[in-house]
Length: 97
Image (spheres, rainbow, N blue to C red):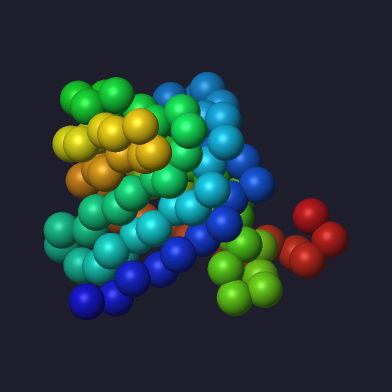
């Protein structure tokens, strides 16, 4: 299983910011059944469905991650887990922003 961990500087769900996200983890991002999780003090509620976008750092590089549609399956006080529907787009950003 391939796992990618990103440290976000910003995360948006349905166009609205998600506060205090410490990590975005994607599991099997290029498979037919990718899924992921957010570690945050402001988790998305179970059942929430919509697009998720993030600007984050991984391996010393900045990335824009776009998930066309997620559905949150589990939500706790420290984060949430979600299924991903559609492709995961990752775009490397310039180092200066």
